[in-house]
Length: 627
Image 1 (tube, one colour):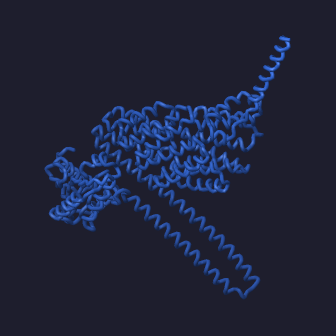
Image 2: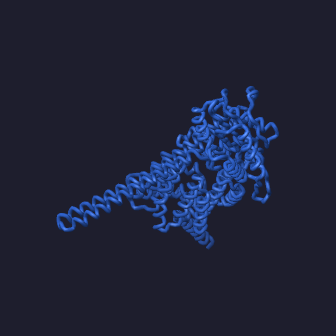
């Protein structure tokens, strides 16, 4: 009896073991929605299923790898993600479905994009879109389209990015695919942030956050929160940025991946550095650089590290950090000439100034602002090309309509001669329409040209002329001037203790001070006088046809008007500011811009050394005066 019971017990255990194994093999592969909802749990399930797929077809194994890559991407396991995507190629055959191959190209493009290989990424996204289009796979097409738009925005092709993104949005909206709509909102937010249109950026990041909260996609909620934090950082609203970065830190608990902390450390380090809280910033910057971060992000961290170390007077360490940033940028040719690349020139100028090399600092800063203005003009020119292309398309459409109508006219003439007068009137109407279109096109082109010209000669913050224009004006004026026949005086205005104002009341208040000082100075000067902003808190005035006595009256009136103006901070504190002013005039020894600028700069320096809030005229005996 006992042997029979024992045999039955063994049979039961075998049955139980078989049932458990069968159930484990029958465990379903997580869907895309499952992975978005629970990335970590789905990732573990896929890893558990991986051995059971080894004898499956290439198509089934590729499906598993694509789902695995999706989970790794959401968990920020980027090294594993790259390795998984590399395996795709070995499972793609001529029999592979368009859905799987187009998705493989999509993920391969994401790998290239993250490595900064933007040209390669664009090619891969286009391949994904092409295959998706041929197979009517709208969801994959839209996904690849929005990734393509984001990649182009990283190289500052903003107009092209927004045009492509609009097409992706219309398709996603027609499909009523909330997931794709959320991704597109997030990409809109990023691009508008790059374009410094911060209100629009915040609006789209909030839209993205709302969509993903309704879907309960935790990884995407964290990404949208990070987007809000980053935009507030670019906007200069540092306290809000820090708050959202801290929210992001708590939201990334869905993943055990420690590398996720890189992004929160990156965001907090960059924000605190820009807030000038350098001691705390360097702690987070070190944390981020010690992690396995993205290459171009490390360049940004090293730039902020260099700026902070310059502020803390640790110049050798600042040099090391800046060289590291320059090296990373040099390894990413797509970044050459962008605002991120140009910023290293500005920081090197700051470092030269801190080392006591003012001439080199001036050259580097001058180069930075010249290249930055050229970049703005280039981008403006690109927008003008787009406008012209749209006008050309419209013209072709008009010509096509006109040709079609003329053919109808010819047919009507053959069929019915009596309608000749009516047809002639119709042709005249079309001719007038073409003239109107051409006139409107010319007007639009003229307005765009004037707008671009205004951007090239105006300082965006103060509304005054910029440095390049004011010095070109001086060059042209002095080329025709003689000391016997020409009276010309230049005045340099510098806001006293401006850095302290920024540190105490914040940069927005500093911007307000610059605007008001510009407005007061401009209103006090005569109509024929010229004033421009030539540096952070420095202004240069050109006063022709004035004697020294007349100049004194105007200059002191500017100083007094500024001194009497009451500024109000965000905390309703009343603040008065003062300015120091240097004055220099042309004479037989000074008939060129360089000499005149050197004289007025020395006079301003003397005003600063004389206690500030005063006006000092350049004297010839200062010729040996050293800056």
